Amino acid sequence: MKVVVWNENRHEKTNAAVSTIYPKGIHGAIAEFLQEQGIDASTATLDEPEHGLSEEVLNETDVLVWWGHKAHEDVNDEIVERVYERVLEGMGLIVLHSGHFSKLFKKLMGTTCDLKWREDGEKERIWVVDPSHPIAEGIGEYFELEQEEMYGEHFDIPSPDQLVFLSWFEGGEVFRSGCTYTRGNGRIFYFRPGHETYPTYYNQNVQRVIRNAVEWVKPVTRNRPEYGHSQAIEDLSSKNKQ
Image 1 (spheres, rainbow, N blue to C red):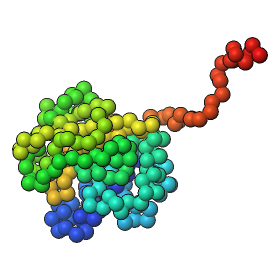
Image 2 (tube, helix red, strand yellow; image 1 turned 120 degrees about the vertical axis):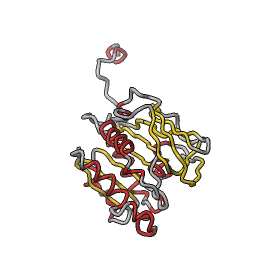
Image 3 (cartoon, helix red, strand yellow; image 1 turned 135 degrees about the vertical axis):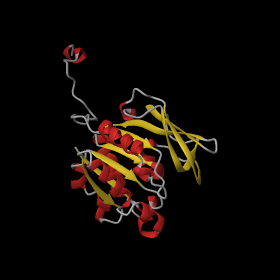
Image 4 (cartoon, rainbow, N blue to C red; image 1 turned 90 degrees about the vertical axis):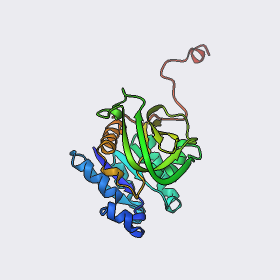
C-alpha cells in the first residue's frame, strides 16, 4: 500500500510558530508516523510541479491524505479533477481539519462544507459514537486535546454514511468530527482535529485514528463499473418474437 500525504505547506513558510511545531511540515510529521508503522508514505506539496500530484504519482497511490487551509484557491482545477477521478476509481482519501473547505472535498460532497469556527485554544473532547467501526479501533470512549481550534455545527455536509466521532468543545459547541463516505469505488474519511499552531499530529490517539483510517479507506481490488449503453446479458424475449 502506497500513501501520499499532501499539504499546501504555506503556513510552515510564513509562520514561525508552525515551523517550530512542525519543522518537517505537517505533511512530514504525518508521513513520519505512518512510516514508523511500516507504511510506504511519501509527501507532496502545493508548490511542486502539478502540486506533486502528477498522473503517474496518483496512479500509484492507494491512499491520499489531504491538509489545506489558506491556499485552497491556489489548487489548480485540473489537478482537483484528476484527484476526484482517482477517488471515483477507488483511491482512498482522508481529508484533515481545514481541508473541509478544499475544492476537492466540496466537489465530492456537493455542498458548501461551511461551519462555525473560533481559534481560542480550547479543550476538545472527541467521543467515539460508533465503537464498532474499524477507524475507532484502539481508541477509548473518548480522548481529549488540551488546545485546538473550535469547529461548530451546523457543518454543511451531506449526512455521513457513518459518524465515527463527535467533538465537544470547552465553549459548548459540538461537531461531527469523524465522517465516512463512499463516492464511486472510493472511500473517504473526514477527520476534524489538526490546526496548524497546535501539536495535534503528535497526539497518539490522533495518530492511531489516521493509521486506522488509512487501512479502512484503502482500495479493494475491483474495477470501476462501466457506464452508458449496455448489451443485454440474456436473450430479449421481445426481439425473439419479431
